[in-house]
Each structure stands twice: as structure tokens, then as C-alpha cells.
Image 1 (cartoon, rainbow, N blue to C red):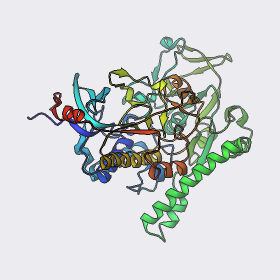
Image 2 (cartoon, rainbow, N blue to C red):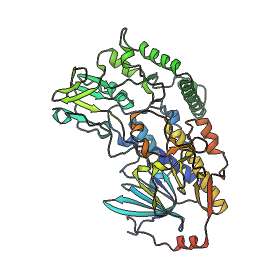
Image 3 (tube, one colour):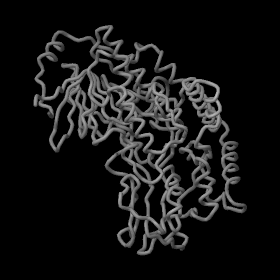
Image 4 (spheres, rainbow, N blue to C red):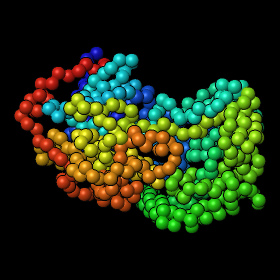
Length: 503
């Protein structure tokens, strides 16, 4: 078999929701560009293929989490994981994207050469290193480690006689029928797991150190169902998509402007869905303001119904130690359990954990600034997708694709081989990349790129701002530095030996 091609105009890393979307935009708007998608796992889907725990679902509605170029057509606005995985797979098949994917290629490093005006990307495949080269590197690898979820070092964990499971590594053989289950955590994963497992379990308890804000909404869209009876489906999709976008942005801005009012409304909504006299103030009234951490969606009140009929319960306390029979709490109470599920979060990791270098000098991500939330200061021909924390990930992934394709076309039209944003103000204030107090963010804050105190070095978490800034703003803005190829650079690229690739 002949050696596979290993030089491309563009390398996309990751074949999940972002990577498949990036490939569609690239082949549509830059049809002359050759590209490959390097995917570390065996299948398409990213998050939606990795997570297999009971009830796995989106915590954003599919009218905005779905691609704008391929409407979500199923009735459920809050969709289950298998349906989303099928949607991503079908999208890749429909547009011929699967033919561009190299599976089980885990990218470990990428090095930019200004002399050659290209990246050398090293991946591991079948236990051996494989190298590729490209003119532009586009990271769509998500924001967390796929191989390892986060679990605190719980004292006495080795004493527990039952089974301890992290949702990121859900075992296919886990039998929880008539078992007592404790889920540690109160984020989206726990809120999904508990009502999904409550029907089979003897009892399931959500053990939380501190409460989380909950927002109840229908899994289906009544408005969409009505409009489909009188309007074409494509029109309904666009209307509902924009309705959801505007509502998301309005709710977020109101929460930030009027946090106490938003807090009262969220707690009131929760209280109305739980039994009379339930300790809502203890279990569902966080000390932080709304959207300082992500708000959990409760579709069709499923979590509240499980609590209300006694199949599930909530305990707000801290773990003192695991015991042979369960968990001893700091209050002195013991929770008995046959299975403990540690829904304790993710290990944040951007650019897929790959080590970056520019002209032989390692790039310390924590020392860089993010340009428009998608490029890194002084790192040429490079983009990384990071979605919204207050809305659907794909909304921003689509806009990033708009910008990257515009940038590459602009470079080709003007004969540029290099584009890199540069901060000319050494006194610019360094601020965290994410304005979020969630544990998974705080644990990674030092290793993440930083924001500046002004545009274009800030990510506004605002779709309307991004819509115009990424789709229509001037590319040569005085911050982005472009370079044309020297005759030496062109000759070097043309004669560069091509590393051996996997067959």
C-alpha cells in the first residue's frame, strides 16, 4: 500500500462536534485547501462518543448546539447523547468529511518553523510517532482530558467494599438494579444521572458540598411544535434558533446585572417544583451569584420529580472519609452505599494537551494572551476552538470557523504565508481566560492562556458581539501581523523532506 499523504494545507485536530463543523466550513469556503482531521479515538463524536453514562444528554438546547448549516430535526430540544452522536456522524457522512479523518492519531506536539512557513505535527498511531506538516493548524480538541476525569483524593477510598465509578469512564457491566447509590457532585452530570438511575436503584442520593442553581425547562419546544404546523421546517428552525440565542444572551446579561433578582427567581422556581416544606434554602440556594458557575438545566422537572416521590434525595455536607459501607460525613452521619459515583468534574486541558513550539522555543500557554478567544499571541497560523460558558458551544465554534476561513482566504489573496497576533503593550493587564469560579476552571487557571483588559484580547461571552467581530471585522487590524514568503522560505518548503506517515 502506498504511503498516505502527510502534507496538508490545514490540519484539524479532533473529530467531535467542533472538528466536523470546522471541516464543513473549510471545504465549503476554502474548497482548494487540502486538509486532514487527526482524531485520537476510534470514532467520530468527541464528548458525545466518550460519555456513555445513563441519561447522558445535552445541557444546551439542540437548536443552538446543532450546526447552523444542518438543522436539528428531532423533536427533543434537550437531546440524549446517542442522538447527538448520531447527528454528528450523519453530518460527517452527508458532507463526505469522514474520508478526511485519520483515527487513532493522538497529537502530542506541534512545532512552527518561520523559515519553512509550516507546522510539523507529531501524533502517536499504533504506539509509534507519525509526523505531518501543514500551513495552518486548527485545534478542535475540546477543553478537557479525555483519558482522565477529575477525582479528589478521598480519604479511605480503598476501604469501601462496593464499587467506585467516574462517569467519564462508565463501565458497561455496571449493574445498579436495587442498589443504594451515592453520587458525589451537583453539576450537570449528577443532575443527569440521578433521575436516569432512580427508577432501577433502591435509592440514589446526590451528595453535594455546596448547592447549584437549577433551571427547569421542557425537553421539547412547545413553540417549535406549534410553528411547524403552519410554517416550513427550515423557517421554524431559524426562528427558534434565534429565539433561543436571544433568550440565552438576555438571561445571562440580566443575571449579571441583577444577580439578586435572578437568584430569587431561580430559587422560587425550584421551590415550586419540590414538596411543601422541603429545605430549598439548604440544598438549592448557592452562596455565589448566578452564572459565576454554570446553571444546570432540569428538563421536564425530572430531578425534582425523583426527589419529590422519594426515589432520590439530596444531602449537603462534606466527605470526611469513605468507610467499608459508604461515606462518613463531617456532620457525623454515614451514607450507606453499594455504588459511589464520583461526578466530581473534568481535568481542563486545551489544545488536546499537545506541546507547542515556535521556531524551537516552547510555548507556555499560561504566558500567552488569547486573540478574539481563538488565536494565541505570537503563535502563527494557529486557531483553537473554545465555545461559550453561558450558551451552546457550537454557536461560537461556527463563528470561529467563519473567522478562520476568512483569514486563510485573505492570506491567499495577498500572498501572506504567516499571520500571528502580537501584543505591543507589555503593561496590558493579565486576566483569567474564563470568568468562572467553577472548581474545574480554578484548578487550571494558571495553565490556561490569559485575557487582556481590552479588545481584541478579550472573549466577551456575547454572541452578538462575536457575530460581527468574527464574521465581518477587519482582518488587518494592526494587531494581526502578516508576513509574505521570502524566496528562501518558498524554496525550503518545496524541497522539505516529507516525514514517513502511517499507511
